[in-house]
Length: 443
Image 1 (spheres, one colour):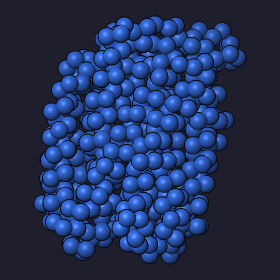
Image 2 (tube, helix red, strand yellow; image 1 turned 180 degrees about the vertical axis):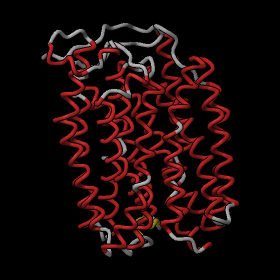
Image 3 (tube, one colour; image 1 turned 45 degrees about the vertical axis):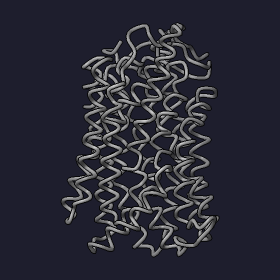
Image 4 (spheres, helix red, strand yellow; image 1 turned 90 degrees about the vertical axis):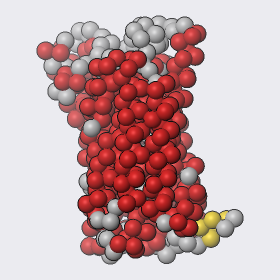
């Protein structure tokens, strides 16, 4: 059956200019909160050395942060949508910036794991507010280039930490991790609080509604959150998101620990930079670049085919790092490939969700899907358990590779047929075989 598209509409030049300005503001906000996730690995060993805390205990704080950053996003999205395009985005993002600063300042004073966990709770809620609204704004303003716009927004979060890896390591080395937590949290959260007031969503008819490619399936109607949560397609997307995010978050949280275990963390590679420093910069840059790149690709060849390419390469990358990544340059290359092939979930999945369930409730609907990242975070400490049980990281990388290959199969042979049925039904397809795809009470 041929894939169908929604009718097209064109935004005026003023609206077009404004939407790019909104996209840029969203990207900057995402850059400023990136260290909360991608800079975390720099703090793990210093905290363990100072307080005698176990690595697994410290990583619980990371899991709490990720969980609350994601699980609260449906609330943030609902508030932003409820308050409307003018008030909602700016109020939610600005408050999020304030909470980010408070959470990291608490981390700087934490003398117990309980206090560290409290900082993770507050910074997680704040970071989620910023993330949910910026992604929601992108999918609403750019229906015609949804994969690219969401990819660029998510790239700010994925690559933003690359800008501060060196200065953050310098501050930690010279003044202690507490100072780094305090000043980076205060400055970055404060800037988000200020520029968040410039954000707004599109008014009805202000943003384009055309898809950029006949390869992209888009629904002709918008599903409310309650309707979406009753569909099997949403829960399939959720499962796929969990599997890929868990493997990627393991790499994000443990990359410094893995480099140390491999005995290459402090080997100098280039211009005095160590293996870990080079790897972190390369990882963050590639993680960020993956999001707009694969988002752009998916706008042209379709979401599921892009997932198959990215996650298939990701499975290979995990296997290569676990098997051949024990030399410095091999570690940098294979770790970089891992980050390049998992970060794109933050452009592919929101785009796929909005394509399937429509733009009207996009902020809250994509936020519900984003909670899968929080679910996956609680699998991260299991990597340490498996590593200790097997005596090395090889088994961990085998498991993550298998998870990636499993998602490739799901994308091509389960998700694509399901989404085709949804979109066809929303377009008024007469094929009775598609009747099961969408619940009758949502029509």
